[in-house]
Image (tube, rainbow, N blue to C red; front, side, top):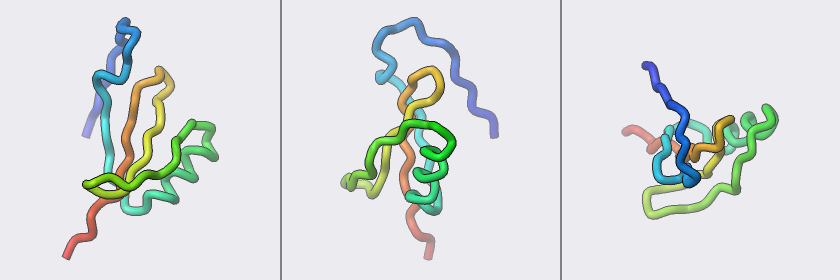
Length: 70
């Protein structure tokens, strides 16, 4: 899979973003923080747990916990 993000000259970079689902949300958050990436606190949403981080260009990236498969 390839995901490409291009520079945006708009001052409001929250109009678009990207999201990922991961198997272990807190381990992912801890790994990002350890790597120097700012990550907000985990929150509970109607669709589940997630947190927001910023890519190096300041774009919003939402990381959510993948639903368990039966």
